[in-house]
Length: 325
Image (tube, rainbow, N blue to C red; front, side, top):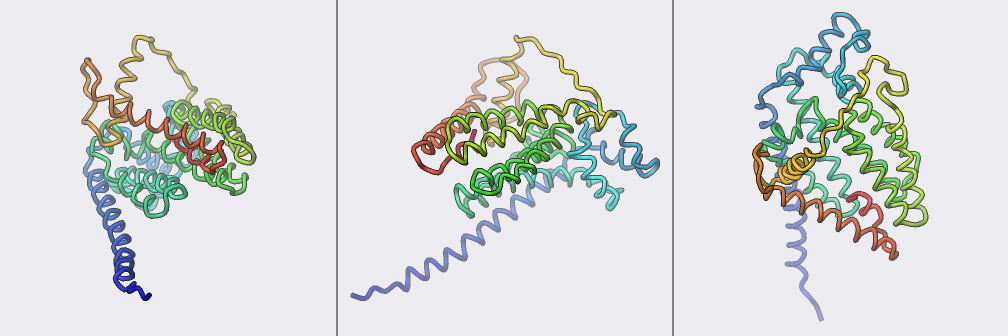
């Protein structure tokens, strides 16, 4: 019996053309929209950090970098040194800080898509990265600071970058790639001490949990990932004494009574970053707006537990579980 496959082939060809075109359109629209939002933002004092240091370097040389009065989040390795060549090439340029903030944001979205690609496929990974470009203006330039040129979003970029070689090692690549993970984490930690709580602690904890849940080679790689975080834990305020001009760390522990308010604001922020809800209100009351963020975190934890459990049962899902943790 002969079957006419002509319509099916035509549909497959049409789909093969429409899917890349749709992805390209979504990606282009997201890039343009986010760029417009970032370039229209109102400047603040922190955005002038790199231009001011660039002017000082032009006038007095690189010795300025060791004489500059840094804050605890000094941004020296993660922002200032990478951006100085760009400043030298394009300054004076009033929109350059906003552009660099947008580039860090686009980099974060691209890395998330690359991290998801081995698990979900090339097209869904591209769609994920493109969808993240449609973050709300409040998430980009307001409460979220996802596209600020000199803020903690830059640390997000470096730490997401550190996950790329770590995930590659979990999926079978050489453990030597973890040297890149250690270097990226060290850049973020020396430049922003809050990286320890925001990224190092989760990565270290996820590595230890994965080492218990997984077996064989992936267990050894999980332990090596935990080992790659050690330099960042041990570098101290002055990068093992190599950068004595950096400000010493000094943290004051707040009262326990403030924990509920901070937790509420954090959950509201998670909901905002997921595109749910508006700006974080300052008033008190029942934190119903925090529910979406709490549900999102609970869902990620549940998925991580399921994938790790399936890996123990013999299914190769360990890298996915580690990533979600």
